[in-house]
Length: 306
Length: 306
Image (cartoon, rainbow over all chains, first blue to last red; front, side, top):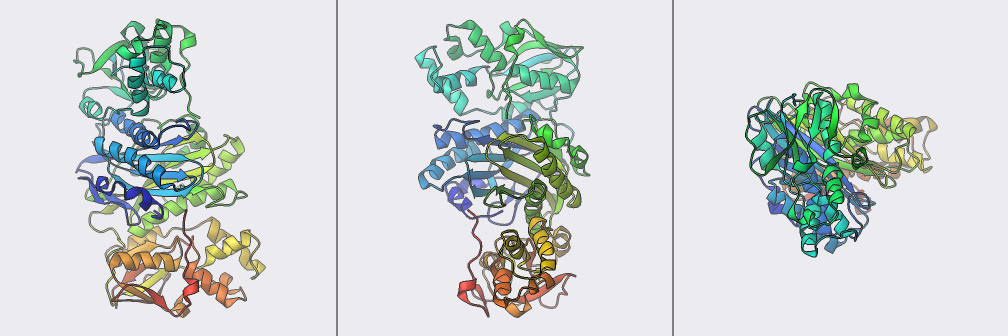
């Protein structure tokens, strides 16, 4: 790891580089992380690119927070205990104010999500932010996409469609309540990965994925990995009061079905297993393949990265 | 992890995503890695940017190989056993031929360095390649930068200055033997991280770093972290026959002292401990601080990333 300008970032939150699992943080050739006996390492990487995953007008603090939160959502989807993260930042110019506010966003996410920053690299170039998250899970208990069986309940956490509506607020396409706008923007800019829920679902859920591409797209991934079909009842889709302030009910439904970036968990529970707090049943698992429901095919185009 | 176009890459080397430690590879929300009982996780991240870390004319296969090899060098410097890696690739257009040859380079490095690809993300944007490496080391035995003590021997693996000379070949600034040019270019384009040596140095070396920024720059890092001084004898610097074909002896010495990208290991050994094969003593450790030697101050400017 080249230190170089990474020190510019790290000095803003060196106190957040510490954590129970961090045996050696930033400053040597690599970091050292302790897992608990019997744990497997869980790891995933996500990149955000300016103009593609965030607007050029985005506040650096939001970019930093969101980069960490979206990566951490993959740990939640596996039921993993957060251990730490690394950050690879490419940026055009090392502007002190930009780095300061960006780092505050990273530091806030690191603190709130228990993900100490253990390493990183900074390079000069067009703005891209890559976060690698590290977690631990008792061997053999990780939540996979492949375990759903016919008869399971199909469930989701929180509410759906908020982030898509929040992006519409940002781009001037929101026609609902003004009071709702702030809430929805925050849902887009400051996603809350469901780490506690993911850990609580270990040994309960049969399959799990996070909703990043949109409910239908991610439901299709989950159904395909499990070799089953999902049937979704759109009247059961949890929608926030803010989203419901939008007069256009069809648009509410479209966002709830296909809007990306909510970072809720979509999971399956055996029949009879009671729902964790803050989650809803939205359908059921059947034999077959694909995702069906009481909605138009035209509403099924999810956001495709790249 | 968004699969998306990552499948474009992964399909070129899905067979290289397997490894002893890989419990779950690409295809779920995150990967699962097994460590051995008593091992700590070692992790580091490195980014290569077009125009900064490789020429725009570089072959995609070389870019792929080099991105993995340079990241893996941080595992070597810690004495870690390679477990796997993730790849975050940002590229302007998903051109099939480019991805094919790039992936061949990644696959070759994955195979040669025992680093199965366990996850990744692809995004559209200016070309940047970020590789995160994962390794394991018996808890408490990692090679750190901080353990050198006065009286130790200062040692380096392989030969120095070859990569800088290889870059000079690429940019038309080489005036040595034509026969040597191919060798030197390969040393730049296909660095060989010293993973086996790093593992062999565990419990022997007192401190270790990889030479990425140039011998003097990295020696300064190592000396500072250990709180000691190094004295280097430039007549002892190992130089390849290819580099020695250059008539300008001063230029040979400058590259050996300050040329980056060799990815050799610089380490300290207690007096009397015999040298591993393929390594040389280049100086000694003294009380004090900084790096001194029989060379001009003007030769001490190392390559600064960013």
